Structure formats: C-alpha cells, structure tokens
Image 1 (cartoon, one colour):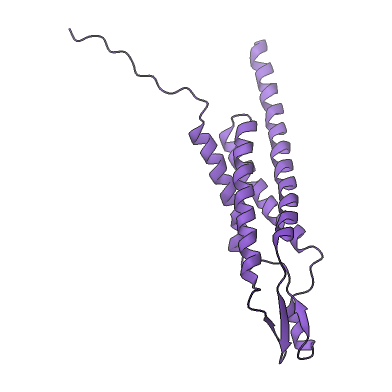
Image 2 (cartoon, rainbow, N blue to C red; image 1 turned 60 degrees about the vertical axis):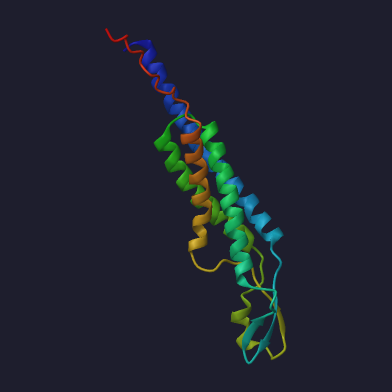
Amino acid sequence: MPRGLTSGARHAGGGAARDVVLVLLLFGVGGLLCGGLWRWLWTPPRGTVASGVWFPTPEGSDFAATGLYVLVGLGAGLLLGMLIALVTDRRELLTLGLVVAGSLLAGWVMLRVGELGMPADPSRLAPRAADGTRLPGTLTITGWIPLAAFPIGALVGLFGVFVGLSRKPADQQRERPPDG
C-alpha cells in the first residue's frame, strides 16, 4: 500500500479518538460547572405546612428552579456546541453524535450536581410535619422536557458554526466564454 494512504488512515483514527475524549470531557466538565452555577443562582423558596400540605411563599416556586435550569443549560449548550464545532476535526457526523451524547451527559450531570445535598422534597415531608412548620424548598426540575435544554443549545451552536463558518470553499462561478 502506498505510504500516504496508510499514514492518513492512522491519523484519521487518532483524530477521531481525540475528538471523542475531548467532546465528552468538555461536556462532563461543563455539566459540573453548570450544576454549580444553577445551584448558586437559585434562591430556595420557603413555605409553611398546613393540614399536611406544604404551601410555598408567594415569591418562591418550582418554576424558578426549572427556568434557571433551562437558561443555564441552553446558554452553556450553545457555547459548548460552538466551541466543539471549532476545535474538532471536520467529521460532521461523528461530531454530531458526540454532541448529542455529550450534551445529554452534561444535562444529567448538571441536574445531579445541582440536586446534590439539597433538602428533601417539602411536599413529601409535609404530611408528617406539624401545622405551621416552615420548610425550605428543594432544587429540582419539573418534568423531563427541561432536560432537553442542554442538547438543544448544543445543537444550535454546532449547526450555527457548521453552516455559518463552513471551511469548504464557496462554489465559484464559472467564467463563461463570451457569446460568439
């Protein structure tokens, strides 16, 4: 086999392995940092137990935690998707698959880090608590749809760079011979 063909194939495999490690590492670290940021930005609501039910104060709600999760996840996903599109070798399908897998990992890590060490869900503690007991809220998201925030942001960033900053040369118009 010609020397140029085998060395190129070996380089392509090494680049792909490097991209896998790089992308998953960036998303893992991104999930850790975003989980800490989400937790730092969130203010726990307070609430009071009455008749075995926890009632949050008017300024506290689960929406704040879910909304912050979506905002942080979308923003970080967008930035990481753009960064990964710029730093990986131009293997579009591999990079797309890695961004999907990595962003799902990052969203899950972000959720777990944010919830780590939080108090128990006050609505589950309320039936056993005395009336008038004040309980803090807990950091969590409502439903599974917010978990799509990180992947959506990452895919938008990835496609924005792939489409907007294409490395392929633009098709040049062919010069036409003069009519004659």
